[in-house]
View (tube, helix red, strand yellow):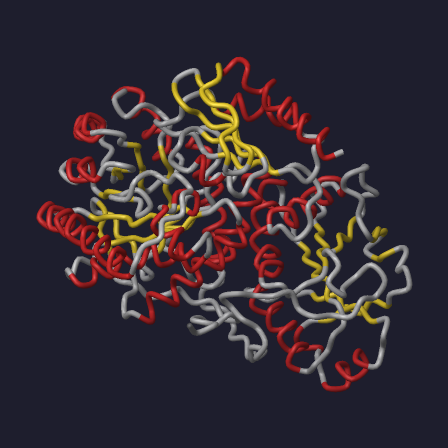
Length: 575
């Protein structure tokens, strides 16, 4: 597989086929569409209509609703009717899991139907390894083709679009048994369906790959783009970081993951998944899309990619250690705030200068400053640390060019990226700084971050810096919460529960805790979390230790206390 399918220095949208969803066109030639998903019961027509209207009023282009069964799928028709009576013709998407027959029904009422390859015809994931012979595996693919082809024929006759939406948390046991819990398995799960679409000449298809791990999400989508190109298809991509959480963490994780791909022109429709009212997702998504889209037509950046850089599987750039910086050490934070006990910056700044260099010599430079003479002087200085900055319209492209030039020239000095913003609000700064710095960290290009913004306090910037490092899993400084946005499948008050779990566990630095509304992705995402809190039925919760369900169907009012006891008991045993 080619290690790079795009120009990483110059922003251009990836060309794709056009997909029509209820009159809204999704493609690389159209604006990036923004969408959200209701968390009402799809059988609650008035409640769903009211929430959809709020999403549209905030700027949503498309709205998705869960369809657990045929009853919910049919009621999409009633919801659409009421919306039209109110003058709202927003496209509606049916979200289908576990029942291929429901997808057939939904195609008669929704403008687009999302199917999940992990549970379209495969059984729900049980984490069991199955030893398939090549013949048995081929037979499963024949069964898939027969069922999915019939669905595509129905969608073609109804003029409807589909989304092939793979979630890392719900890969089938069949895929897991053959490919393991790997990016290759995630991509193959998707490509099995896309090959059928191609063969049946059904191209009204949008594709998505989602995971709660931003770095894995970014590199897996890059891998998918390469796989599609190799097989001659170019379907539009829907982007999102699933289970991103709420508040600051949810916004940072979403901007890091979605922004990293948008920066390379990848992505045609996005959803920022927050564990909040769904209409709150729209302004975040719109600001992120607008920020990246402004790079179109920028002044060209003349740069060469370093031969050792692998776009699909990036590794941390090899650098020498200069005190606390570089040499494979966790990325540093440069800040004007002294920090608290958990978020202590590595270098303090006063009046724009580092107060204690700790033996390092800092050299600020832009891409254009990397002359042969400058590069030679840095090579000959064992204490040199480069502080890279950019005022280019495409700062990510120019900062990438800066580091790739160093790699091509064999310069091993560490690099800290200094980004100056002039945002009026912390929310805007979070979105833009996360999008700019997150991709550089995921690509392994930088050894530290330095954010400046006059209208935002040093304390808030310090927390943001650590939040970006946490979101890219470059440096862990606090508890991470893998929390889904609630939907019509959610079995409890997810937003309130997440707040209570955060209050009770926020001191447990380094733990990953999943707070999941239902079983669609819950058990699968537990594989990435240390502990999981998953809705099992109305008023019932199951607790997980990684993949293992350790307490099943316990009363909701006891669940948080028993989660804490599970964590405490494990810590006692480890001690």
